[in-house]
Image 1 (cartoon, rainbow, N blue to C red):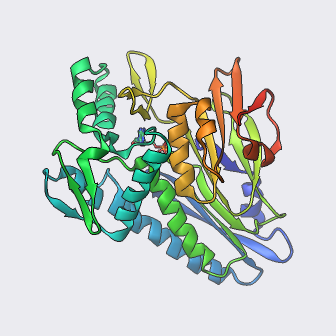
Image 2: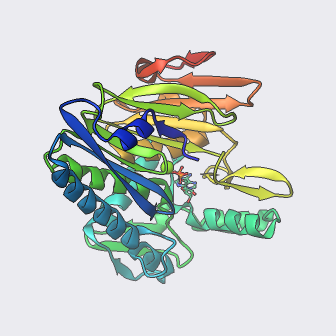
Length: 339
Ligand code: ADP
Ligand code: MG
């Protein structure tokens, strides 16, 4: 279940042509980065071949990036870095270095809440989830010692670890980066508009198939319905939540996002939705706000807008930034602006 759904997508898919002057070509890609992926190209009627070609190239880009970046693929560049001993320079492609640098900046910008060097902690808690036993104090202590940026040094051509135990986990930024690169391809293809979506995180640009803005529904993390509808043009939106991916130990649910300050799963923020100019920035802040909670809204840089939902279905509170409220079509009840 993705937290963001494109309102009206069913109609475009069945009728093909909606507005008289343009048509939306939709490409559904089978499992990209472990989840569903959908690409849309909007072109003048009769130019469907241009759309098909652009969508095919965008999908190829996503698949190429996945094989290079995934920590789930044993011989990816990132896996090689993680498996490397201390002191060895591990060569990385330009794209991987770009992501690691962006992740390092994000660590500074979010006051340490977004931290890809938390790999050892993420692995510890994943293992705990599989075994169904909480990790002990000393295990958490050890994993925390191995989770720090001082143990990873970036160079112009690669990265060096200063401890063999150090690991990067780029799952919280790689999807956003990949969406941006696929969107670059669509943007350059001379389309009227387009959209790249992986598991509910997306970039949209230009003209939607119908109307002037892209209508995006934000699902209720604890219920069935829709919480709100965002109206976007030329922006990215990413979400984070504990509704889909979580760790369960002894019947208790733990967030899959780690609070680097404690080395423990973040206190459940049921859902975070972030709008930014690019998907990488939105992705990073979605993870960071899951750690920081509503207070984190005060830290948002210029151009990044967000909504944080806390509490239970019966007692829910919604906080958002001013700019986020402006992008909402329907306002949910009990929404408070944090500035
Ligand atoms: P999703 O994959 O559902 O989009 P996120 O983008 O929020 O979720 O990324 C969460 C993933 O990022 C986790 O599964 C983990 O691999 C990694 N991670 C966990 N905690 C942090 C953190 N504090 N900072 C950066 N990455 C994290
Ligand atoms: Mg994300």
